[in-house]
Image (cartoon, one colour):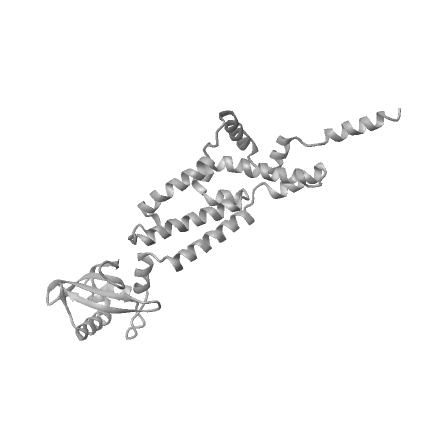
Length: 287
């Protein structure tokens, strides 16, 4: 008679132990059916590959949303390495396609495909690791569920905000350490001369010259050079004007200027600038 209550107690305790699938569902939360279906497919095929559209389109933000923060850091680092590669080879962006550059997007495709094909597998491993951690803790079943629910699930606030912060840090570091040709062109265009402080160089040149073009030049030069080319009216004839700016750490200056391929003197450069920045917009060549 004294043994039966003990046996009944043990059976009852064992029945309260949550199943692995129950712990997975608690940890995953939203869209558990989708992920368990993907994970079953991986197990049946004995594969690590399955497609995840959210990972493809959202990339690091999907990982942040699912509270997988290490992949967010890895992806940001991979982005930085790509920018470093383009910086080393001195890749030339264009202002029109700077934010949707074809070459850069092509280089990003392998990374997007990788996270899309292996995202579900990594999420499975992430889930298994956290369930294993929960099982190693001195938790009762309810405490285990509470811990997994807190560690897992989704997070718009913390997860997505964390990803935004990492992407911001990545963008700031890239702009500061690895400026592109567009960044360096903008540095000159958004600047101004001491003699004409109320008008930026870009505004002045754009309203005076026809077909203005800017480019970053490093070939055959020990300096970082920003080259401007435009068409101006000289005595009723169109002439091509080229002006080279030398960049330094904290400033820039005109290095040389040419009119139809002929270099002009320093005094002639000052005279040209005086005409450019003192010509009313109504008399602009583009009007």
